[in-house]
Length: 289
Image (tube, rainbow, N blue to C red; front, side):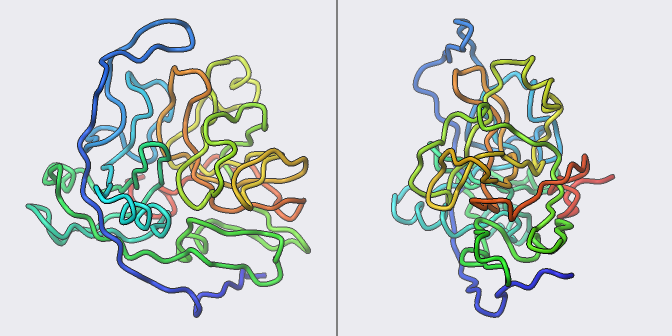
């Protein structure tokens, strides 16, 4: 049975932001192991890390793939971060790459960035300060027959490419990994999951291996067990969050690859199904192969 959504009621609106510069206050980031490290982090244009690449192992911290978009005005940036949805089409509207298009691939809380992927040749033409316009659509989406499933941050066209199947009173969702609640860190307790992300902690490598998470990729869809994102992010036994991995891991305690929430249920209405190829790079056709 095909999913039925309220597509006709969804509003498409423009939001715009500028490619933001990386910012450094102190050169060192002290990790959970007490080691001070220096390396790239958030912001700017990342040329050699894109959706589909590994989420762990980079010589950086909270590395954002592609380009990072933000507004200086707090309210305008709030609208950008709430209304932009993963899978939305983004278009460059200033600078050398004007007219080129890409896709929104995630949202990063704390720094309040929207992350956008462009092909390598476009990334080479982009410059910090270039304006990116996003055709924002997806917030307010519902799935007919599933009032206990909340959808957020998700473009309706991407939803239809995710291979979700209706199985009785459940939605069977392909995911590349299943994450236990005890591994979740930064982002818990946020008042809303319609922006930002939620970090999978990576300080205990053995636990990651036990759950088959050491090979996570940027863009992977994951299920977080016993966690709800209905009204913020909180522990709830039996609940499920389906999200997308949006930035790299971190050596800082309580941090790791960030997950932007896409679907959530407070009960068994969402059934994750392991599928190694469940990655938005494949669904959106933004990587070769």
